[in-house]
Amino acid sequence: MNRLYSAIGRYAILMSSVFSRPEKGKVYRRLILDELMKIGVQSLGIVALLSLFMGAVVTLQTAANIDSGWIPKWTIGFTARQTMILEFSSTMVCLILSGKVGSNIASEIGTMRITEQIDALDIMGVNSASYLILPKIIAAVFIFPFIVIISMVLGIAAGALVGSASGAISLTDFEYGLQYYFDPFDIIYTLIKCVVFAFIITSVSAYHGYNTRGGALEVGQSSTRAVVSSIILIMIFNYMLTQLLLL
Image: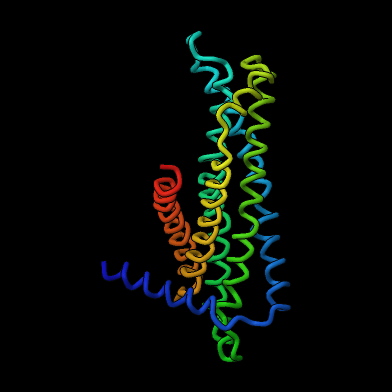
């Protein structure tokens, strides 16, 4: 328990350094653009692939489990919409990105720590925490909502196409299910979650990388701890935000 309190304290101190005494805006603009490419654009491929298959699988599984004539066909479209919007595109995509983005951040900053590049920045009077971590947080918080929206659109579109092609449901019934009892707040809820998860993934991964001590082996261990910690926190905050926003 003491180790947990110590880690929380070090994390809070690091975050206070990240958001204090920033460097010139011109420097941050270039860094943020670089991070948008690494965190966002380079993650689109895996997110798009998973979203397409998830939308298709949810549609087919729902169709396969509707055996009763009492359940209308449009339920398939309704289920695909709710699954993609409420949980997969926000939570599962962020869990996937915690592995890809989080491990990259932790290993990048951890390598800079063990090769004394961070110490060199500190000696030159640069706020190394803000210089290295803040652009990653800003880029992730900005780009994650767009990634999640793309995931929702692709998943639902794949479900509609696969359902129609397989004969499980007509496009008309699927569209009716998409529109049935749609609450726009579901989108807002999803975007709020992904912004919180983006901050968790980048800040927690940066914390583990920034506090790496040792050599290459410790960098790998920091990356693993970053991913595990991010996943645990995402699941905890997923429950908390659902309790606060939906109930």
